[in-house]
Length: 469
Image: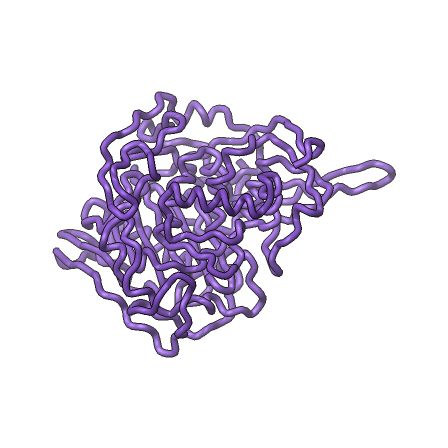
């Protein structure tokens, strides 16, 4: 990046907060219930196989239908395209065992002990997972390691890889070459060549609008798309997200580009270690710099509003904002169908959920299934026996396992003594739809550079959804 295109400035942003809410009771299962059997394929399911997979028994795919409006943010879905048309109809018979042997089996994996609620019966996703974000317990999963196209959820890996590289106040003037190479139909913020944006602006464009143009500009600042793809591949390996193959940094459909519900959950957990990542993924709406215009010999640059396309965060006509949800990322492409990873906090517990490619192509179905899984997870936590775990990155504190083992943490990093409220007091700029309050002393900032093992991190909340903060 030429030096003339870069300068620094000052901006302030609010630190988001947590909302603690109650959960209604769910029906309970017969004590000792366990699931480990694959579901039968649907009639008329496609026989094509996704890259890196082999045919096997599992959940089937329905015949194709048009992408539902508002299903999730697009990384490049053509109008009238069939969601998930290129993905295999069945998972492989054997998959990765990273995180535990049960997670390598096709079908639903769950151990419902005494008092544990039954799993939702109307789940149609090809793959999903529910996990405790703090201790890493996988509470239940379905084809967790099935390698499927990830769509814009791959932007979580992009952000986790590049966020530490550029201060949020750094500014960059967009060159035409920065925007080259985007796929047809890509989702955009939009950005304009010749205009200057801060790094913070660009990341808000990535998280709220799933802007492939913002991804390409940040990639250009990082030495180009090819260099960024290599960085992302290396970081995925560090995280032990070994189902993930990166071809395009924005998640746009590309041959052999795959990830899994397990990997996307690992990636989200890593990203949530970063304060800026937490803030950006929790922002409901903000003002964004527009294009410079001239009138009467004077230049002016107005702003326009961008709003988060994560329906469980911002809400929609048929999907209310989920209580306690604090991000993370949604996506939708022709090959991937609808994908979603979310994090939510309730009653002092933090859960991660990932849902990939629901067979039901109804409006906002990916969010509806994610919400049902979160409801189940909050009710099942402490009652269902974990079927695996989210492994820590290679070399992280508390990591004593090989890449294919579940592992047991051997050390717990000490938390910082600074409460979240101390950071919240420094918040400032408007246009952010995030909560103003913070949870009590339960949630504390971690010591810098220490991986979270059996510790909490401060999560953003969304009590003031849709309002300027």
